[in-house]
Image (cartoon, rainbow, N blue to C red; front, side, top):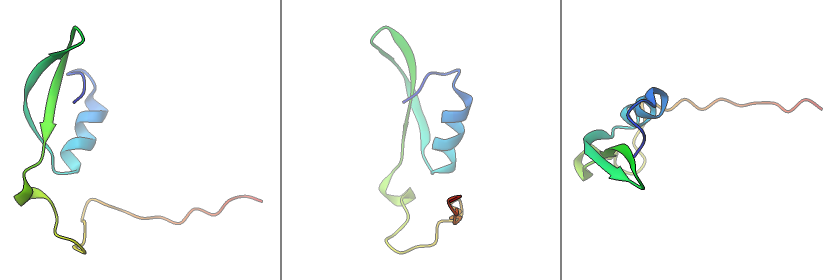
Amino acid sequence: MTRPDNARSRAVMARCGLTQRGEIEYHGWLQVHYAIDRSGWPRSGAALPWMEIRRVNAAG
């Protein structure tokens, strides 16, 4: 969940395959609730098209 105005968090959740399921109030703050169904979860070992792995060399 995240606040409705947190566009970056919402974009990350969407890229990960989560979909908005509704709005809830949490500790007095309006939140949007995201979730993923089992059918939307990639099977073990599957290539994840949204994931990019980069090697970063430490300066040293």
